[in-house]
Length: 304
Ligand SMILES: Cc1cc2nc3c(=O)[nH]c(=O)nc-3n(C[C@H](O)[C@H](O)[C@H](O)COP(=O)(O)OP(=O)(O)OC[C@H]3O[C@@H](n4cnc5c(N)ncnc54)[C@H](O)[C@@H]3O)c2cc1C
Image 1 (cartoon, rainbow, N blue to C red):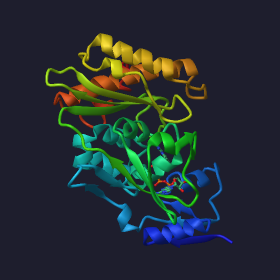
Image 2 (cartoon, protein in one colour; image 1 turned 90 degrees about the vertical axis):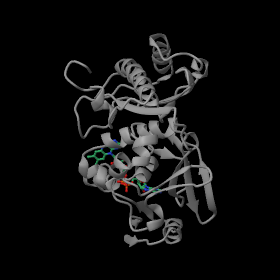
Image 3 (cartoon, rainbow, N blue to C red; image 1 turned 120 degrees about the vertical axis):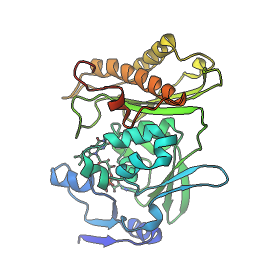
């Protein structure tokens, strides 16, 4: 028998999930996918969009950690000053999602729990050091992205675990971040490839830390490893070339209708380089408007 319930508390939602109901947040994947014939709607649904505890942003007074409620939409992410000022890569990613209608209905929680390697918030969340809070009748656990995402469209969350929030550590004022996505056209496109970068600079302008993560070139969002050796160096052409080489070497893309594996491997290096350059410019205090794709001209004729 099919059933649709609107939950008003986390406990209520979790109890219904333990009883077999599937969560519905903004519905831009679940309902749109059903309408497009990709997957039937589950028999039992629990709508969580009225649970006020899952909405909004909160900064911890002690640690400075930012808590983003699972129901925060892409439209909120791209305009909230805390995100635009300090977690800019996440604002860049949210601003590229679908159309204005998709961004107003689609939530960060739905994007994370879809587990798509092409999700636009994924690489930004990885480089910004995000952790995810999952709640079930057994209690609360907090997991790293690498623990949650297990393959294309799959997560390690149990069927009765509700994602309640995404937690981001505080950011130093000398840090910057950016997310750049290859675009064939300017709207309604799932990423062909993308890259996010987060950097922190020493007073003299050399790197004190760097993280880079890649979109749509592996079964899950892929963090580039082995970049620690770049710290202490200036962000110059040589360093950017090292980032390109590492990204291309670690990517394991597939070929599909939209791009060959070779093209994805090539362009993800370019996106990684641009993301590091843009993140560094932001760390230096330069203003590159959100989404950075527009500021640096990705997708403009002749600059692809
Ligand atoms: C036209 C169109 C364009 C799009 N373009 C992009 C794009 O450019 N980039 C991109 O990344 N995505 C894109 N998407 C995908 C989609 O919009 C996003 O993934 C969105 O963030 C999903 O959020 P939602 O709230 O709508 O999820 P829903 O459809 O409500 O749910 C998605 C999945 O997550 C589960 N879920 C949702 N919330 C929770 C929770 N709190 N805890 C546990 N499980 C949960 C649901 O059960 C379901 O399995 C597009 C979709 C459409 C229709």
